[in-house]
Length: 494
Image (cartoon, rainbow, N blue to C red; front, side):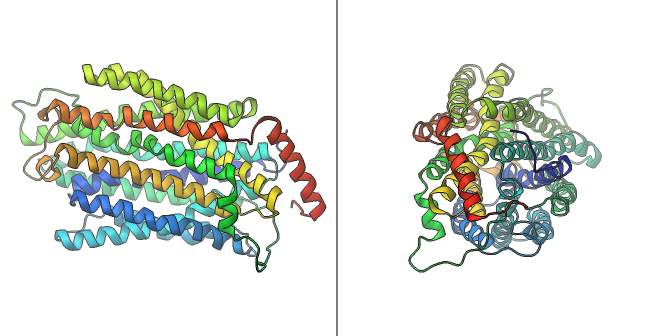
């Protein structure tokens, strides 16, 4: 089916907005655990509780935001106004998150908790309406899937920007500062990364407001006493519940990015021997190694994850979504087995690279296909109930993403505690520890966070797809019936 609603300029505006959002989200999700544990050196138990409790609040916050957005349509649209409302606050909070204020541990924990929780709330305000946009930009399911696919691809490109900054700053900043204080260097690095990411990311994100049009305008309907609530409709939509379960079980996939910086610090060292170096040279060598190892993982993600995302529009036209998920997740699990075995016997990062790359392919697939599947589930719900809760549906995906990152981050913190890593002894103004200074079992334990843990998660997430029925002829029949139902109700596509 040809694209006949979304002009190319609008498609790019939405996707560039997604890229800006990806930059800002990656700045938080990929680095906040390293920043809290190793730079601010907050107590691991505090970080663990903060991540979990904040996400419990998000479990309430995301659906609430979805219901708020679905409740009314303004003159400027149902989804679009929130893009403008959220832009500046999310930018300011991202910088504040990496400000490193000079406070005692107690006040510092309070400050970090307030900023982190506030960031999550404002990000929900930015995220839920934005990723609901393709559902109202076009009634064409194929075009909607294409918009999601292209948007998620550029979102992934945006998420790579902080990774590039991490590498460049890691190689250049120690030489500019010329200091032996590794702790102060890391504080400066993260603040520079945050400022640059926010400035560029907010420009891209906010401009989408001016170029995206909401065409599928479902009339606002006042609740009728006795009819199912919005949440009830969501929970009774079996296909949607299966997609959400798939997302929760795939939480381990976030480890590849969230834990990569920790693996770079405590599993591998790439560089010249450290013996005989001055303090400044040692800091520069170790930080260059951390940046290089982190970049190796990012390159694997770019080739595997982004490569898969580029091919998704073609794959999604030719194959059922459920088959794509099952096949790629099984392949990712198999690759993780080889990665783990190589790490166990050799701890050689370079031999692991091709298998890490393959295990990143399902990450790209899931990043794209879950949004398209939720769109199909909303079609199903509209056909069965007469209601279409676009924002609440996207809120479910937003919650799954945040919960997945929270579980990944919590797993990292638990691993620190389990193997006895003490950040204040690893990185301080007086000392900086290289991975090779740690016991081999500690190094492998950290490496398992990006090898076997994501693999098992991918295997588990494929299981709900065996019960997912919106595929093949069932999907075609559903879309035809929905089109006829809309015509009968007089729903106009602007």
